Image (cartoon, rainbow, N blue to C red; front, side, top):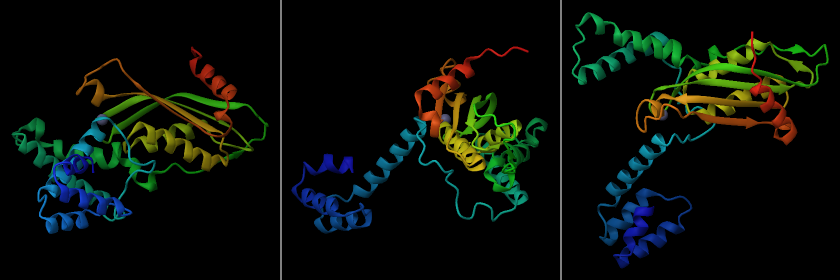
Length: 272
Ligand SMILES: [Zn+2]
C-alpha cells in the first residue's frame, strides 16, 4: 500500500480509489484493480504491487524475520512417501546443478542429486515428519527435587529457512518440575527434532519450550539458543564472529531471580 499512497498525490482519481481501498476491511487487490481500470488511472498498479511484495519477501528473508511460531506446512505435506519425495527432489537438484553448468557425468558429481535428496528428506529436514517426534515418556518426580533442572550446551544443527544454509549452535534448556520429570536425553532429542526443519531461530526456541511445557504439564520451562547462521557468517555481510541469541521464558522463568539463576548456571564452566 505504500507505493500506492506515494502515487495518489499525482492524480486526483487515485485519491478516490485510495479512499475506497481504505474502507475495505482487508485490502482486496482484485477490487483495487477494478477501481483502477474503471478510473483509467493506473494500469501498472498490479505490476507495482507484485514487485513491491516480492521486494518485501526478499527483505524479510535476508533479515531473517519469521512469519509464525508454527512451521508453515501445507495440508498435503505427507501425502507423498519419503521414497517419492527423494525421487522428486533428486530431479530438482539435478536440474539446479545442470543449470549451473555442471557435468553430472563426472564421477564426483554423479551421486550428488541422490545424496542431497536423501539428506533433505531423511536427515536435515527429517523433523518435519510428526512420526519422528520423540516419544512423550515422563516419570514421577519421586525424589521431590523442587529446584530448576538445567540441561546446557545441547548441540543445535539446524537450517535457515531463508537461505537453506546451516545454523550451528548451543541450546540451554531449564524446567522446574511440578511433579513430572523427563529423561535428560529427551531434551536433546526434542531440540534435534525441531532443529531438523527449515527454521528461524526464534521459532525453534518457542517450539522447544512449547513441546516441553506440554510434556511436563507446566509453564515453568525456558530455552536459550546461541547459534551461528552460516548465511550471515559465510555470505551476505560475511561476519564470521557474530552469533544470534534467542530466549523464551515461561512461567516462573519470567521472574528476574529465576532468570538470573538460570543464566548463572549456564555460565558455569563445567570441566570433566
Ligand atoms: Zn539465512
